[in-house]
Length: 394
Image (cartoon, rainbow, N blue to C red; front, side, top):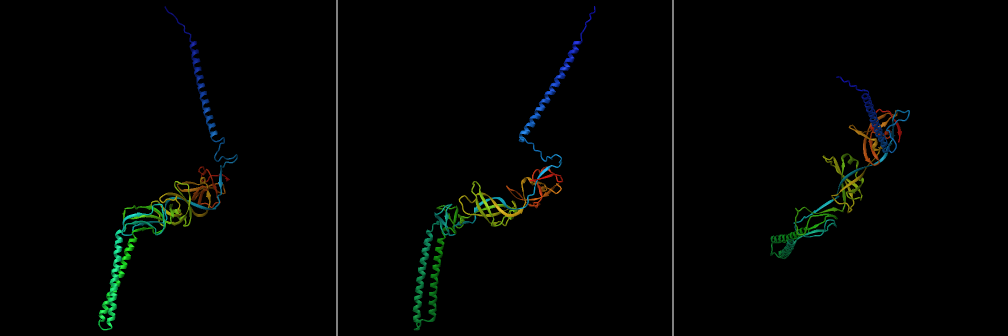
């Protein structure tokens, strides 16, 4: 027995159509949400850029309507008289350092009269060495003078008596000559004894260690009880007159620009005090390794100036007549330093320059510019030689 089953496909087809329409609607909704999110992100980025720029949008070289050439700021710097300066560093030292040691026989130190930091006068006794043995030697030499003088007096008396007898014929002329020679030898021995005593006293005086000049004691290297001699080295170091100096290390090229007599401002490290100095000598030798020389700058004494300390110096160098430009106007590459100038046809031209001293007021141009050119002040890195621009004078 056959059964026939009737299947209604209309419901199935309707469900398929509804599912497809629902899928399409979901895709459209997702695409719409994606565009909304993207728009929000772009709007947020624009708002942030607007806020960061202060509400103004700056477009470099934005041309005005009807003008295709970008506007650039230019300046004709002119040429002025400039007092250039050189900044350097160096070490403080005594201008004339005087080492003082033992020049006598030496011996045991019995007293030291000064210390580092004391001022002393010329001839002042700095330390005393024991001289008990030398005093006895001095006494012996003084006694030798008395002995020699007694011999000389006796020889003179003998000669005087002989001269009285020679007239009577009792003594020959030969005897007179012999007695005269004896008297002369005795007198000479007196002089020798006196010279030996003077030598002994001079040696004893050298046992005192004396300041050869007035000045400030920088170092003391001796103590009571120490045995010293001519080979002991410097026992004291003096700064003659208390004068100090800065040994400024300056580059080879800059050293030529510094003249003897130039003034500078010295600032010791660790303090804010400044001192005026004068260049009194330039080193005739340049070190091969560093290519630097030394400018010796004299300073008056001040407790803040300690030899061996580090200090900076600003030295006034030669006066020049040259243009000066801000740092933004000067560019550099492997070929050296250069600037961009705008010629009569408003075309950008590259001009090589040599820069001089650098200061807060700008950079001095040693060569390459006369000062009458129109120099591009800013954004020269965005230009290329040959570009046509619209110059705006600063």
